[in-house]
Length: 233
Image 1 (tube, one colour):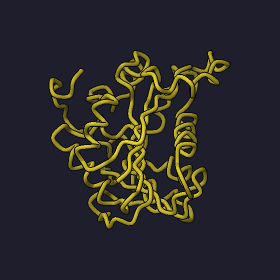
Image 2 (spheres, one colour):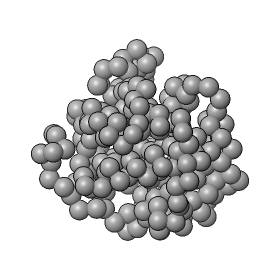
Image 3 (tube, helix red, strand yellow):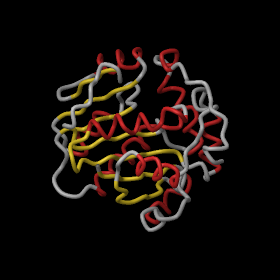
């Protein structure tokens, strides 16, 4: 569905889901035979293989939720520090209680972009952002990055039926307005980013894991449950 034609939805109150957020995600994702940790690590390792040059020193985890991916961004990418931001005060409070060395968390209002981040990462965030606020969210990420900084824009693939089925089982995803890879590229370009590449990931469920060696060759086709648009400021 085109974003222009889509009806906007009411923003989700993620504070209400803070304690049960991880369990709700796993309930939906369980249809694939995997859990959220499998996909989180898979995304970050995929990103690592795409990164040119030296490891990023400072990473922004935009829409970090309870902060479960932030340690992976630090360890897998070799970052010195990760700052996770989210609109939910309850989820940020939970993330802070779990934070280790080199990890910090703040609400989006508390963190002020200073163009000092090497890499920004987000996953499944923009389908929750109201249509008229998406450009502002892109601007926030752009302003956080240093010149030449990279943005890994991960989203759910609306053309994948399994993606829609999984999201229908997750309370806070049921009314989300999905964004296609083409629309994500358009949004990023309009926000001042250069598109370095788009790749689709997570084609095969666990029962077909023997075929996962084909995922990299198939990444140029819109088959996977998710996609990454890699951008540069």
